Length: 261
Ligand code: SF4
Image (cartoon, protein in one colour):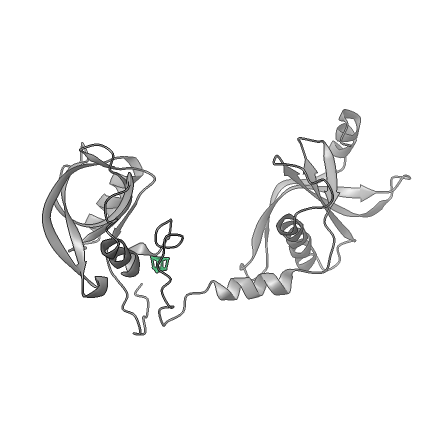
């Protein structure tokens, strides 16, 4: 149990609060809430204690595997960066039940590096996975991927949701107010070409959505734009801080892609 008296005691033992943890190669990072000196009854240092404050539901038997892994990663980065560190323990501290749960197990660094490698972009586009749980939801890659667009077009859901993705042409834009006229496009040739439909919509770009549009325009991009999560419930479509505003540049399947800088 974390009592007030214990908390005061812990304050005197604090080494770091909200410390950033980064491996020396910069690939893995985390942010620990608290790092304490772990002392025995005689006040002698016996190690370090990493405590992560948790506001969610507390465990009843043991930490969830993903929380256990997260806590061990903090421990392992700390050990990797401090070869002469004393033994390090790590615990999740749950505010709802004022309980502490220890994370135990071997090093997770090897698995963490393998996961990092798996996130590195390949030069050949990966196989698409169109479907309601992938393209139908949030995906960072839609401005470069033709498959969500084709999938929506074929199943009749293009531009039908209250928050819709679209490939559009920008006909008018007034930078002060953010007011614009956009024309919806439809996919051709499997989504690698955009065909204007003649359907025009009034639109309003706000905040970060407007800034992003101005950045795209300043980059001299010409041609269609990808707009992600446009709010379409009203007659004037809204593109705000929650939206992606990017040049539409589909990457072709089966063709090696080298990123321009
Ligand atoms: S939009 Fe493309 S990259 Fe994203 S989930 Fe669909 S197929 Fe995959």
